[in-house]
Image (cartoon, rainbow, N blue to C red):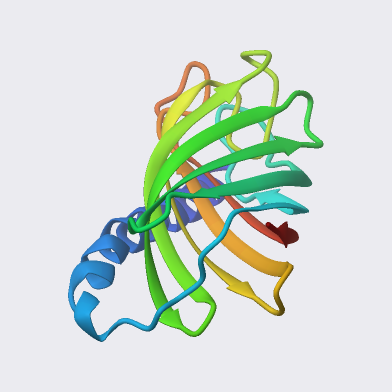
Amino acid sequence: MKTTSLKTSKIVRLAAIAIAITPILLIANPAAADPGMDGSYLGVGVSAGVTEAAGNDSEFGGTVQGRFDIPNAPISLRGAVLFGGETVSLSPAITYDVGIANNTNLYAGAGYSFIANEGENTQLGNNSAPMLLAGVESAVNSNVVIFGDAKLAFDAYENSSAAALSFQVGVGYRF
């Protein structure tokens, strides 16, 4: 059990560092950035929680995610519903988006994970908590988007200060 906790804490620390550094890298040279992807989308995919704490197992399930593009601004409003555990996590966020190639963005931001039934397991723990996220999205044609991201929720478990980390990948319809 202690070995699992040590491995989990190392994964969470590495993810927190990666998520914290991403915005700095994104802002470092915006003038050289590619046009990236614009438009809003709604998509579905898979979601895997990779951490566990205080006797709560990690979860695997699905996600419904969306992006609302704010025209002429490098920010987006995003939302995700993670399901497949004992309850759902509703996760709204705001992100800073940077084009890295034609029709491709990196994004990083912050939000909150609302657990529908506190104490029940989800991919983002079992306690509502603030979260950071970082990901990539790319339009493969005019209407189809692929996306992937990591979400890190802090103090995400009841009776524990442990963080929860989940990874999502999916496909969406761009409009």
